[in-house]
Length: 114
Length: 115
Image (tube, rainbow over all chains, first blue to last red; front, side, top):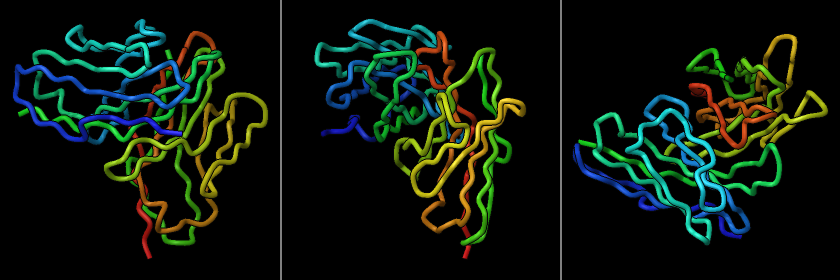
């Protein structure tokens, strides 16, 4: 069974640019959640996708957007990058069958905005 | 809305000593509570979780936590620390109703284990 994978592992961008981060969910999972973890902080919920539809969003501006594909993999897109977007971006997959579904995290993508 | 407070951003213990990492939560409905561990340059690994049932839950690597509703706490303990326990630990909460899969994390506690 393949776990959650994310690409790339590291990325350096400059202010104003756009970035796409990718996540492959664990086999059999239908839900992907994205989190932003700034240095020295706990992860913050960005949004969740279930069966290709957004299923909840945290307190992040619209320039953070996402997609989920028919194979349940997902992308996180960030437009007009700001310095504060520098963080570890974590993807978690789960199988949505009830009120609580255990999330399995990938290793993350480290984004640096200069 | 739910929130989690972790007391102590850094905790240092000697190898073989008791590990106690503190977590208090705020939730308007019964919560589901979790402890995750994060090793350097890695993602999050679930240590243990409380959803329903027994309030003392055991997890991996010898860790356990007790859900105390009256104290709104979910402290993480391990009787004897090992060098390999050095990592960052996060407490997290999901609401049992309407919370979906949104995990709300604390700010983390960095555990240092000394010889």
